[in-house]
Image (cartoon, rainbow, N blue to C red; front, side, top):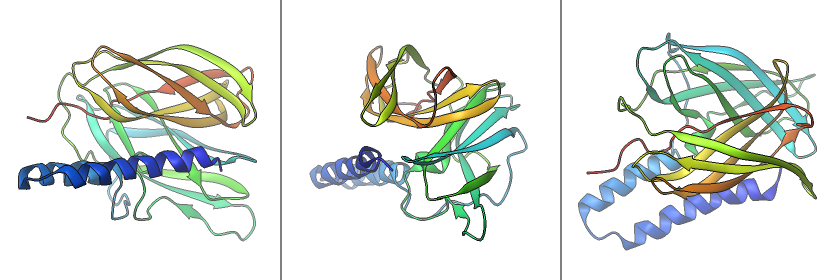
Length: 244
């Protein structure tokens, strides 16, 4: 598994700790605690009640020398935007290997939640931190929304995708534009490469901050082989509205 992915998670945690040291009032501390809970969950997440309005269309698991990634494609039939949907996955191994689940404590929220899904939207969620040497398949459950989303949720627009090869393998770079008036922080992009409907590669990209009306560059380091495949990048907002 690439060190830079683990480094991204550590960097996010470090930023939260640094900010905490500057807070002086009880009110600010409370807000910080809420943010920290969303960035890295102290308790595990496990779906016990399925979301009737969000269907798992298909799942896939890809593996190469860089690691293993689980992919969940989902579609919402809800009449409104749903936010912070918990995702429980079980990745089974070939042979007698133990199954991997994403219900451990301390995971970044993007590894066990879909940030946002709009009505009728087909979305992709990727967990590229799966510990499985010989993955066979993945089962997924989508839970009920944990946050209330505004009617006009922020939108991110992805553009200018380019593919290249570096020492770590195939890399897809691009830009994401924040079309909203809400600053996006710790934004996660979920990427899949498709041949027909088959997922041949998957990955993620993280962006620390995207200000309103601005764009930021990103890079997706793939697990699998995205060559000659259709690239789909799902960029849900991480912050739905500014704090008052």
